[in-house]
Each structure stands twice: as C-alpha cells, then as structure tokens.
Image 1 (tube, rainbow over the protein chains, first blue to last red):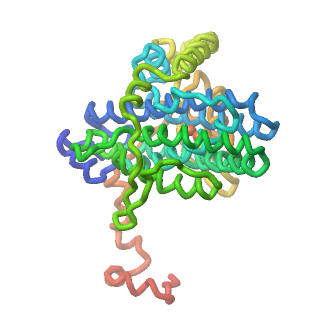
Image 2 (cartoon, helix red, strand yellow):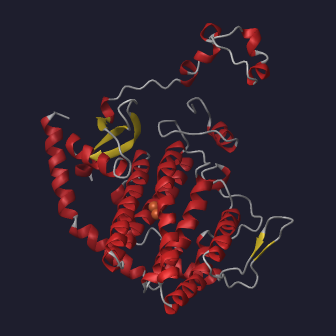
Image 3 (cartoon, rainbow over the protein chains, first blue to last red):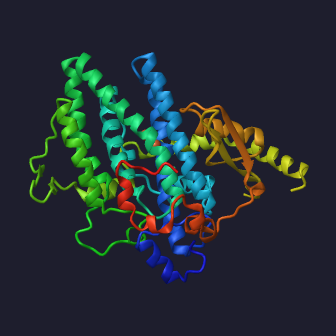
Length: 312
Length: 101
Ligand SMILES: [Fe+2]
Ligand SMILES: [Fe+2]
C-alpha cells in the first residue's frame, strides 16, 4: 500500500488518515515511534499482570480470587499480543524487560504507587480501567493497523475488567462497613489527581508531537483526559461517592472541563526517580525474569534442536 | 540473542463455531508447533469458546496482498446483479422494493 511512496508522501498519507500494516514499507522514524508506544503499553500490561496476580491471595473470597486470576491472565495476554506486534517491527520482549530493568524504560506514574488495602485497590482498578478504556478508544482510531487489531482484542477484555471493578466497588459499598466506605472515598481522593496526571501534561497549544501528527496517537492528552472526566465523574457519583476537586466543572456551552492541575513537578519526579512502589516492582520483575530464565533456556535449546532437525 | 531468535512466529487461526471458517486472529512466538498451539490457546481461546485452533509457521504462508488487484471485483460490471444505470441511482434501492435478483 505504501510501497511506492517517498517519505514525504508516506507522512502525508498517514496525516490524512491512511493506514499502515506491518509488512508495508515505512520510514524508520515512524516505525520507531509506533514501537515506542506499543512497547510502552506492553510493559504496562506486564506490570498490570503482576499487580493483579498479587491480589489473588489477598482477595476476600474464592470467587474474587478466581476473577483476579482471570484478570491476571488477560493482562499477560494483552502483553503478549502487544509484544508480538513490537517484535514484528524489531523490538523483542527480552529487550522490553531488560531495558526496563536497566532503567532505560519508564513506567506510567500510576505504577509507582501501591495499594495497602483491598478497598483501595478496587478504587484504583476502577480509576485505571476507565482511564485505559478512554485511552484505547482514542488509540484505536490510529494509523498503524497491527496496533488497532491488538487494541480491539484488548478492549473486549478491558470492558470485563471495568465491569469487575464497578462490581467490586458496589459490593463493598453495599455490604461493607462505614470504615470500608470511608476508605473507598479516601482512595478516590488519592487516586483522582494521579489519574488526571496519567494522561500526560497538557499541550497548551504547542505544535503536535510526531505521534500525533502521524496519527499513531489520535487525540491530545487534554482531550483524552476530558474524555475520562466525562466518564468518571458521573460514575463516581452514581456509586455514591464524591470527587473532591473544587475546580471540577463542565462548561456546558463549550463542553470543556476545568479541574485542579496535578502537581506536574511531582509527577515528573515520581516517573524519573520513583515513588513508594517503584523499587518493589523492579525487584519483582527482576526476580521473575531471573527465576524463569531456565524455562527460556530450555525453550531456546529445544527450538535450536527443532531448527537443526528440520535443517533450518 | 541468536538462540532466542530461533523461536518461530506462528500465525494463529481460530474457528469460532463449526459453521464458520477459521479466522486469523494474531500470532505467537514459540519453539515448536505444539507449544505454539498451547500459547495460541492461552492468548486467543482462553476467554472465548471455539471449536478449533490452528497455527501455521509464518514462513509457510504464501501471501498475495496487491490491493489494487484484489479490490478490482467491484469494478467488474458483470459481477454486479444490476445494470450500471441502476447503480447510478442507488437512493431508489433504499426503499422497500429491494431487488429480488
Ligand atoms: Fe490490559
Ligand atoms: Fe485490564
């Protein structure tokens, strides 16, 4: 499709809504940007797997433990699907994990924090899942077809995670104690500004970044953030809780939201230097990676044998 | 790194129900067809029911993806069930008298 295009024509093509497949010729810079965004999400899915798995033993009932096992499997599946797309354009799974362990890859701000209690975790999930959903709804309009296909599959399961999170919050709210309901409200207060920051700093009218121009991303950080507010504000109040932000308001005429700016200095510091759980996750992933090395070695040796057997 | 690269990419096909054809849903990287099938089941058939999962080594797939050539069918007037002049006023066909032929 993009076979006979010059680099300039390629960029004009994607800027005008053209779609690109993995086997199409594409400029290095475009490929790098696609791989960067997909591998960033892949790493987030890996951490998401560990985060979900960690709540299997701690979840309060057998059925919740099973649901959390299912969720952990989904997240690993998401990681796998994204990693396959990365590998097709030259970024391997080993590279993603090893570069993260070497400090060359950053995590999303939300993964630098943890949850001390189940009630807090269910709120965190609700916030993170709604955030992921609006983000995917935007990304799925993009120009890179393998990413679109991957997102379609991921979004189906993400809606299960969303419903699960809503169900957990509702259940605790209905059947829990006053103290539990209070922890939920406090968790909303804690996670709301973190989630506002999750979508990235405002563009403030700056010229669009490459990813946006080439339609790998389709909406500005501000637009995705507002899509999230559109979803989360009525949801939180329907669950019987409040978002405590004195500036939170929708201008009915323009449809735009105003809200209290997150402390961007702190966000940057957390992403670069770490927050309460950064070292914990890194250590956990390092340990997992080391402890499963023997599996990868066996697989490698086995596949080498297979290849030799068929004379490849 | 060269050891790792021996892992092969397999395209995954899933047949949802017996009255449908299998569809290519993605790919996995695995050292053998057997493990590729297990990976495929884990990633693509864990949540949704299906009747068959297949994997094909990507190297074994022959591809034709010339969009101009493949998208040509619509331009063949003899493959349309009506005469060209009717196609020029498609609005009329939105009503209830849908063409039986
Ligand atoms: Fe996920
Ligand atoms: Fe999820």
